Length: 394
Ligand code: NAD
Image (cartoon, rainbow, N blue to C red; front, side, top):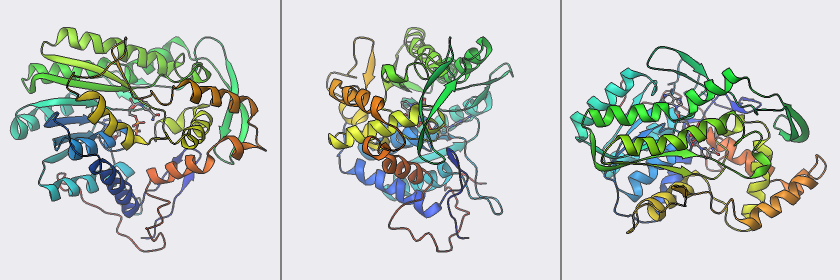
């Protein structure tokens, strides 16, 4: 079938298999160009199919030459529906690993469930023995916990209503948006979904099953961002969840001998998860403009390659700040970058939007996430939407 993008505000309901493969291949080429380091050899990536998790898996393959077991929640193509981008990305990733002769298997299903944890343990036992790195990169709207209770996360402020400039993605205009504060129940729901509880359960279960190598590392991804976005991010519901995640890192390290849990604070980037947060897309489009002008812009793959090759596996162990965080947002948070952003934020309106915002860069990343917008792909050509992932028999 001929596949075109079908966009509804901040999501695209179609994905292009050839374009997704191109996106993955470009990420592979970038990481391959950075050489390899001595690090983990058997890596479990929870949330492995898009965004930061996919980039981590690619860097594990290319820069660590590691076997990877991935967990994702994606949909194959059915009838007239294309698969989700993460499905196509994973098909291409597994092909690349196979070509190199490096183990890669993927389990598709709910990472929050007991059954998935059991399947992963069984697979590690059978195929790998142990893993020495566990990446936790889930971004999900809801979670059914071990007791069978379903929690929903939301992206709201807390305390007082918050009114701020926002980028309306339907027509690229600057509008004012008021975000109502979350209820206590909504805050708790977001902490349950995006906080550290499930991460801690994963590590406890893996350790108790004896499938974690001695001195294994586990890394979860977080975001803090600048004060401009605090009301919606760090002091919002998602920030409450991230602060819970940060505390969980310490608890995991304390309660699992031989395991070190770390938080990597990553750069703000357009992904399926972040495009849905109000106000944040405007900040990102200004951030992209400022960082590109300074020649320091990075995408998911540049971030993850730098994490693996320069911060996580060094002669002195993981490089952390005074709070124990690995700071991959070091360039984003540079004072000269943030100073420019504050100025642009004040000045930007619908008429001068292109002067201050990298709208094209924002949309380029957005289209690329779904496999669209690549010059090398013929989007009028008939393509096969059903693509098999070698390790999954659907
Ligand atoms: P993403 O939406 O691109 O990726 C989410 C991944 O989780 C996908 O692989 C998806 O298949 C998987 N997933 C979702 N629900 C699942 C479930 N129930 N079971 C199994 N797999 C499931 O998101 P992302 O932006 O890469 O976010 C990953 C992490 O990085 C999040 O913790 C996020 O907060 C953090 N982070 C993101 C940014 C950013 O700007 N995008 C910045 C810093 C940190």
